[in-house]
Length: 478
Image 1 (cartoon, rainbow, N blue to C red):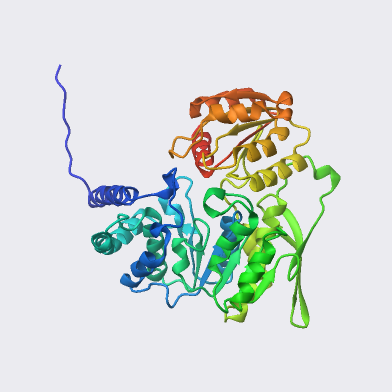
Image 2: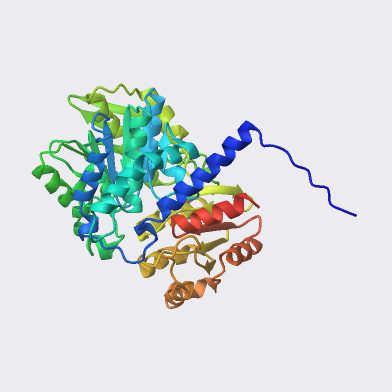
């Protein structure tokens, strides 16, 4: 018996799709072939690599694509992504064309570049890389020591080009690391935002909240308004001092604007909340802005503060010619949903995936779990990056869980050794109340934890964007 071979010609659509796939893979290969400090254990922060002269030159060679675009520049230890999303949703609801640049991505590079909260396409990636390669090659030829533009510098340039190509009305740029030396700090913003200050990247940004605040405050520009969500008593004076030095007007949470949480009924406390509700108050000139009974889907008190920062930003935008109504604010914040921000993937059992990666975000996660799930058995899958404060994070999380699997993510070489995480946890006094496991194989850890979790229990996965992305994909494909 022989084999019958059937041949056919590809349709025009299939040929176009195949060509796009090849071009896209080549574009991705080029981009990920660059130096990528998101995937590097040692980051030379403060050296020539992290000075902005090269990035300024890069932007100039591209024709300064955002010189005529109003930009909101957002820094902060945590809350940048949520605040960006709230503000983008509000402005989109008001009828504006809004571009966003965020990092890192959970699954695909396209997530970093959005227009009206819709990720860019593969064709967009190909077009942007094609436009940018000649400039990168020129910069490579001019560079003698550090090897030319990095991955993040190139993606920042891609975002600026995307903004220009899409003729946006408002651009939102999220800082990658720190602020003062970040590639995004070449923009000339209409407004700056600093969402929060807590301990993270201490080896790079400083060992105190004041030192970290000074790096974040590097985005403050002369005369440009600043919205501050900073609540740390150590960090606030630093932010205010830099703003005063630059004659930058400041609106600060709990001083110039504030929120009041709408308390839930006791019968709702043990159920996963459909929304968080709050009131917003902001004195303005001789009047008072009051928005009552606002609602957001993102969970936690910290998300209420992020929403408040975005709402306060609209008052500044309106002073600069925008027209954002209360209705747009209400509808905009209510629509926001973000993957891996205390995201509930299932109700029976409750499965939560979260991108917490420092002690402050871990504490916010614990607060939500303790508030709404006091009666359930709680299990945790934890994978951290090796440059994080492991003892502080583990000490925050450990008392909240009955069982923990320490593992590692596979998508980035910055992963921490799960055996070392296990050792740290084992030495804590609260470890006697928690069953601890080490499972270096990520998939095996996922499977073991899920098998141990009954329909009455809760399973949480957290520690980084990388483990959140890997578990999220694994779980949703099951």
